[in-house]
Image 1 (tube, rainbow, N blue to C red):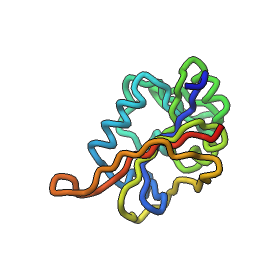
Image 2 (image 1 turned 135 degrees about the vertical axis):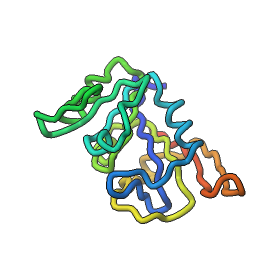
Image 3 (image 1 turned 90 degrees about the horizontal axis):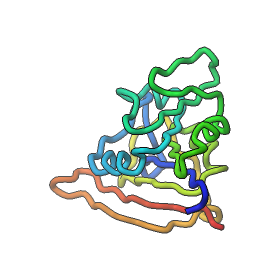
Image 4 (image 1 turned 120 degrees about the vertical axis):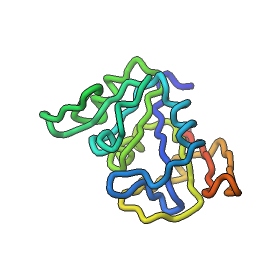
Length: 165
């Protein structure tokens, strides 16, 4: 692992759809369990809308919220004006996670070292999308597929990408 490995984590559909009306498109138990396992005891960096979509501050994580509004308050979280400041707050975490939303992912693509993406095997009605990214920059390093079945109505694949050296 690099000295610091900034990691983007997201669940998206085949068209890179992330959410609609500031809500996730899916609640897949395996994905939520993986998210919790990967992000626990780390900093999670998110935009204001993502923070406001959460039912509560994410436990066992340092919650960092990016907002351009200097008056914005996020009880239980630290509010910062930009991604650079968020990463400075997370400087002691060897693997801070970028957890959304779309605008924050776009900014993070420039500085991230790794992406943990859950690709859902469908196209949803979304209004927020994950930014496009290039295989010239990102190399797929691991894949774990979960096809739909009687107990799993939605198929999905966990994919890990690393920035080319």
